[in-house]
Image 1 (tube, rainbow, N blue to C red):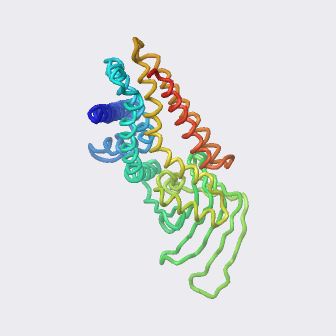
Image 2 (image 1 turned 90 degrees about the vertical axis):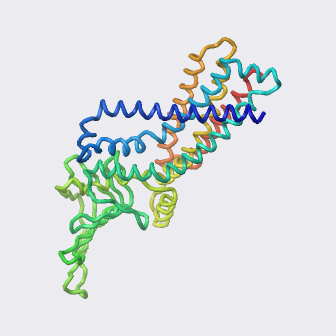
Amino acid sequence: MRTLSRYFALRYLGLFALILVVSTLTIVVIEMLLNLDDMLSAGEGPSAPFVYLMLRIPSYYLRELIPIASFAAAFFALAIGSHWFEVSAAKAGGISPDRLVLPMLAAAVLVALGTYALGETWIVGSTREWNRFESGGGPHISYREGSFWYQHGRTIYNISQADASRRTLRGVRLFDLDENGRLLRTVDAPQVDVDDEHRWHIESAVVRYYDPDDRDAAVRVEELSGVTLDVSDPNDTALINSDLHSLTVEKLRAHAAIREREGENVHRVEAVLYARFVEPLSVVLFALLAAPFGLRVGGGRGFGLPALLGIATVSGYFALRSISTTLASEGVVSAATASTTLVIAFALAGALHLRFIER
């Protein structure tokens, strides 16, 4: 039994690596066909397209590509075994399909642990650098004290949250300095909407003016409404891309704790945080979902129908995950409830499906 377990586990891991590499290379070809101009303009020198791909692929594709590769690897590992009558031989020897699936699930757990480590290092770093690239290569955006910071010229920007899809900034603070680095003015705005012409539309703001030459001078306070700032430099809109996905789990927790302590909405932060834990779990979940479809290939049945049903299952999972994430971000349901319910429901469905496989 140890030999059989190792056999299926290694087949799963080998297929996983092969499928992930082939899928990544396919995406590289598609990117080269669709975005060649952007790749060539990503920087100077022959390494510019490589740098572009090394940032874009992990930022855009890898989080979904890894669990999909896990599903395909588990499906083909068992489908090939069924097609070659390996599963039938195991059944004849008194070995149930469950005992063939378990070693693959154990291997999937190892892949999930690697996925989590990869997500907290390379993928997070690539996402951060990709956001900077999309912002025109502006200054590095740092994260501290529960918010995003960067300095450009004589202005320091502090943003609590950013929503790139809506081009909205929340919890905005601007610090204007003089040539000696002394504070001249602060601008506090609950929300800023940024249009395509780099104009900042502020519904309401509190502006405080300081006299750097007289520390005892009273601070002049002005409340403004319906303000539009014409930001001429596109780099000054870089904070729109201060994506929560560019933060590690530790920083996401700190961000949520600080925002909650200040009485602010943390639904979106929690949705991203719980999604970060679900991503590696989906590697194991997808292997479990694929197993019964792979086992159904035997008995004279081809690969086509089980594969199509598996694709439909994966598509349904991603569709429901998108809906649950949206509901959690809007506070309709808690992020914990939305995430755990989806994973448990599909895990139970996969386990139940496996029980109906012919013994």
